[in-house]
Amino acid sequence: MSLVHWILILNLWILKANSLQAGSRVVLREIGHNIVGGSDPKDYAVELNATNFDAVLKDTPATYAIVEFFAHWCPACRNYKHHYENVAKLFNGPNAVHPGIVLITRVDCAVKINSKLCDKFSVSHYPMLFWGPPTKFFAGWSSNQAKSKLRVIDDGRTAERLLNWINKQIGSSYGLEDEKFENEHLSSNISDPGQIARAVYDVEEATATAFDIILEHKMIKSETRAPLIKFLQLLVAHHPSRRCRKGSAEVLVNFDDLCPLDMWSSDKHDVDTSNMIGVLRNFHICGKDVPRGYWMFCRGSKNDTRGFSCGLWVLMHSLSVRIEDGESQTAFTSICDFIHNFFICQECRQHFYEMCSSVKGPFTKARDFALWLWSAHNEVNERLMKEEASLKTGDPKFPKIIWPPKQLCPSCHYSRGPKDKGGSQIDWKRDEVFKFLISYYGNTLVSLYKEKGLLVGDGTTVILEDSSTNAVVVPVGAALAIALASCAFGALACYWRSQQKNRKPRRSWS
Image 1: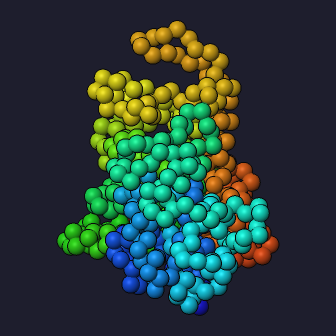
Image 2 (image 1 turned 180 degrees about the vertical axis):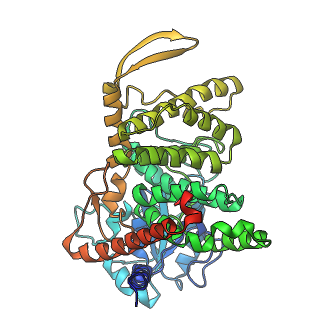
Image 3 (image 1 turned 135 degrees about the vertical axis):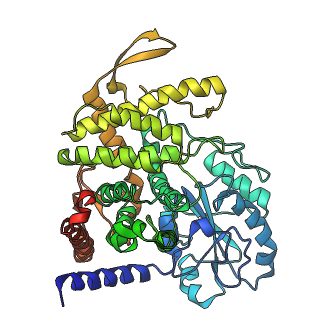
């Protein structure tokens, strides 16, 4: 048996093992559907059990979680359910009014599989509600734990009282009649650099959304095939989310079989294209839970502001600070070609293409590419500032600004010059700007994933030593599993590239 066959078998074994780990992970974007047999299809609260409890709480972007321990035979629990659901619909699911803040869940203690889980929390009555940071639920709770981060909710017997209790904890004023994007208390990202940590979820959301748009609009054609391959290669190497790197690798190593170069020369290319898109939809480029249907850092105060475009910018910046010098020109062309071919807004992609075309020579330093992208983003913001001011289409809570402001990076600014045509010229300390970009879009961006151990995505903690490299430190007990997975994907990717180089008609896109 050839080496390639052994690698494929090893890869399938690793994927199988990962799929079995942590039980069945709840897909947060499908909270409105059945998750546990017998539950109401209209339920908003996430049904947890002993097999998925840790995984769901570990994966959630929410800052807080509520877990209700109940028994399905309990009359008081049945009567309380509609109160609990009225609060859950505010926070859970893609149509939530206030997504990503509190994850509302429940555990049925009358189901035998959950007996030990309920014992772990010393459940003394039904329903019993707990509040705390999601990752603090792993250790359980008992009444004699003075320093526990979990709290028993003692005043939540109606929807109104439960929501009031939540408001007191987080300093909000949410109401049961809130409608989407009304009564918002969004945190400003201008003065708090730590806010970007929430954007790691938006980077995944933007990646998955971009992939969905490409398939939905059938944008993979003979002339766009090569740019997509190059962008996937960039994601495999440098995406800040490991599960997006893994998902991109799975698409990449199967791409030649699913989308051969000669597919469009066939008389049946329409049928072949539909079949290819159907198969590609089965690939979850950032995991099966993504896209979630909402934004965190990139959420606007209005429904039609920020969101996808913000997430895509964060993705591009995060890629720019992770490449090496020798990759700078390849990263530049990959991003420019991807936006030019796959960004659905025609005017936006044309402006971006013009900025790319204005670059005179190839990039030889990662620093230069990162600063060019930063400068290009400010150029876009400056143009949109004028348009949005004229048309009143901007987000009042997140107006376009020249970035980063002094509140975020005081050392980046020399001084402000005289106003020119309604704007102001900023004398930048470019070395300081580059340092800020590396910190902001590097370590700070993935800090939440470090805390939750999600940089790997398979339950094993991996901590990035340097955001500008791929170096990792792995616990000894997990080293072998990570090495096997990395070798399998790496070998498959190398084999894929070697095959392309050996196929002369396809050398131009390898």
